[in-house]
Image (cartoon, rainbow, N blue to C red; front, side, top):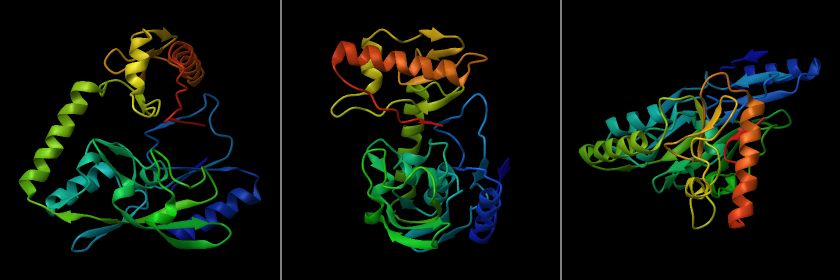
Length: 262
């Protein structure tokens, strides 16, 4: 069962509904970096995309967790505000971007986030500073369940609109050239290890184009596993495990997944 609460009051009602019926909650935004199980989720899927109110101030925005990250980047550019250019091609929602400290091209959420509002069934809605989020590379201190991001405040900076749009165009073109955007995937599979790139190691190990069932290591970017038709989550997980084991055997590097596997 999936539900789309529009505010914290509805979120509390949904949570109680699930608790009363023994349905474990799964908080989900746009699901862009998530691999769901073939059998589905056995509980309540709480989708935050209805939480998308945005209040723009002089050099900042306070936005709901369900706001599209890419659309926020476009709106910031329209206001001549810089900082979100790296997010122009990221297909996720703001809440998920906070949980995993999404980033690209030298920018990430930790550098912009000043306040985060979290809701939990124990304490309701509470606000935390950006430093309290415990951001690190593709991580925050937030647990996978139990607390839900509802609002985020981002601090941006004024810049010439032409310069902002130029950077966004450059990043979009780099994505088009280096990522398999035309094929279904769950995004980057592995976090980059310190001082290296996961895709480079996977490519060196000879995995580009190799398949298990309908799941294939992308020939364009080896850190993507694409669905060539009818791929199951089990096949994708099997391919992830095989790639990780081979890279570790060859290069003594243990790759950690960036994609969230439910």
